[in-house]
Image 1 (cartoon, helix red, strand yellow):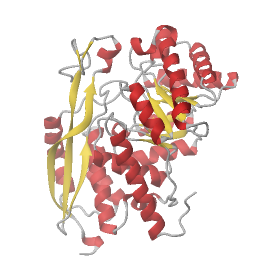
Image 2 (cartoon, rainbow, N blue to C red):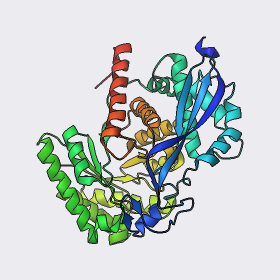
Image 3 (cartoon, one colour):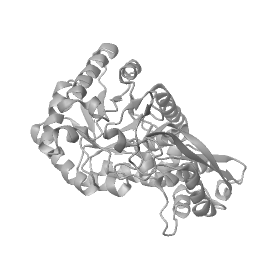
Image 4 (spheres, rainbow, N blue to C red):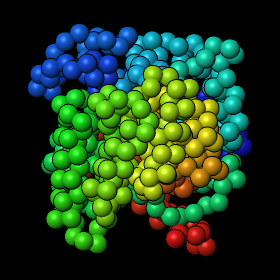
Length: 420
């Protein structure tokens, strides 16, 4: 059957599991007590039945007219419902909504053009789709278009968005979860490009005036040198979940001074600091982060501020990039939604000279992680998250191996493609 005639003949919806847990950020930030791997206390974010819940997901399978079934996965992010994000994912409700709003638009749909199929399938005629649904459906449609064209998902994106096809690896960023020391060792031994995240999400981990965080960051720098050698120079990227602002105050000048001091203490490594403060809304986050960035530049610091909270959708990302309210934007894939918007978000970053970190969440799946790898290579993002899960090895294996296989295919099938 020719690619032009391939259509969706049936849609399968299957409950799935994310690779980690949904966590109530408000409750954790308030200082709840951990109980082994669980937390004690009452959840504070709507939709949470407990502070830590196993991550639900939903697989959507498109049966095509040649009998092949292609898949995509829907899910929230670990801290769903916080920082302006969609509510926590609830599989039964999402299944019902998808069956009612999306399935009728998919049945009979041609899959030859990815952009056309997304436009026609994800327009819910006034009733907004959860971003998780758009994310999962667009993954399946991208795989369908790649199958129809007998090529990789990256090649489909380059063709339809008119992007240059480049077989160049995108740097990998690994996250440690709470097993910080052991996982830093794993990252250093594997010579990961960007590390370790650190999960600095509580007062206990940040410490008075940030002292606990600074000591951990300096330990990371020493350990990386010890295990990786002098020539190994990864970027040191820490996510502090707003704790600079919570501990030393929300004055942008004070926050910039703290970041600059931290960066100086970690030389020769470069510091990325994600989410130094949470100002509670997108407009305030924009305004204050602009001041933090300007003050860092005035101080002559090479530290880079990474934005996450309150910068979720493609429109948010465009505004943060255009106004240079950060140095790097985490494009958190389930929060952006459709792969169409994710690609555009990377392009907005590049157009305005802001770093594009194609991120996501530990609660994603192997399928969504592999699709993200193709997006990262096609758009030549500045870095991408090794996901899913919090174990380091699994995410690096899934994303790293997918990238290596993809680059090998591109170099074998298009020998003239640039690769450096």
